[in-house]
Length: 574
Image (cartoon, rainbow, N blue to C red; front, side, top):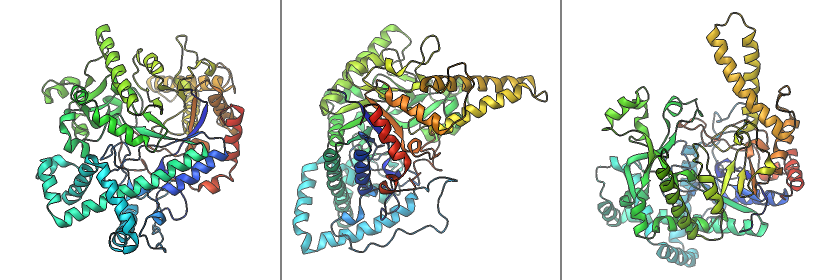
């Protein structure tokens, strides 16, 4: 496939805003941003996963309870058949949830209560009034066509609400067929099951409208396919033979995200079961085919989150709820509690040449099968972290665009690799949703350098304090020097400069001028809003909750919108 040069913006759906959205970004707001993108030279909008999630106060989009079902909270209320013409306003908090100097936050509990009440009103009208008879026929036909996945999901959804949570291993009865018979044999529960199927039908209808709008505007919607699926999901509950729940997938400690002690010491424990690839292969990878084909009904482009996991994945012999128990332990002490099992790469590490060859063969075979599920879609592979040397050449061969983080692209001489040397089959960005906006990092790095200089002259500090401060400052100075040289505001050995509008302009013009087919920035970077979408290794708080302080129409009047259009045109990406 020809890789056209495209400018992209990462815009999680929950972050969007419009009047009447019900407290969270909805699909009408996404259509408005599609129009904004078409007008401002933005070729694709990157979304985080949009699959159905549980009832958490701040649910991670990477902890979906289905690999196929979509999240109803994003539905546009006024476009639901049976919804009253006059909608009550979303209740305003007595004490608004707001970040200092930034946008407000999604209040998931309040949003659920508000939208669920209105969903129920619309459902009563839809299911009982003659005016909706034809649509009810369309709904029944859709349910029949969707088949097994919808049956499993709706049964699981009803059961999890009745049991008080999606952690099915805590339910008093955990046999899937018993649960299915119990739900289908109870008229009240069967009615609830039909209601949740109706919500999925609404999602399918509204997303089809969004897809049509994006295609008509020439804007690609970029979806996200996480490497794993939550153990607390309909998929794992009903298809346990496909998953190895003795291990919990994650990533090794890399020195990042030191704000969380467990992540800094042990790595990221995501709580996802491993795949039994040999079992999946026996039925032609039916589960993966279904997952990708359903996603392809909405998206023209998708990102494979943690594509490294197809080659080998780091795994823990315990689930995340036990992380505090293992935090203070040594590796030997942890192994003693786990019957000798230790965290490590599975099915094999990369220590020996034969292991690396086997891992490469596995990843190549699995990804080729995944690509066959929906030919013609553009595919991006998030290949960050501990990346074996065989991964990037293989991704390029498969036409999967790997990531380029400019200040991580360093050659053997510790010089930054220029953007005109990038493989065009790549995706360039300064940060993902797991990192703060670039300005925040720049300020941290710059301040660390200044602190190191002050520490060197402060005779009241101990030698060890000075040494640690200098080491931190030297590392930050190197990153700033790399980025300064990359964007042309300084040479590597010039004095470091603080953040300014000129630094931002040069940094992102350099990013969009690189050879990568895709160059993307977060909406927080574009609109100069210093908030972070997620801090890995932590739950709750502000994770997955920051909202834009303006609608697409309001954003179109901001100078940042004119700026991104000019940058896209100048870099031949418009």
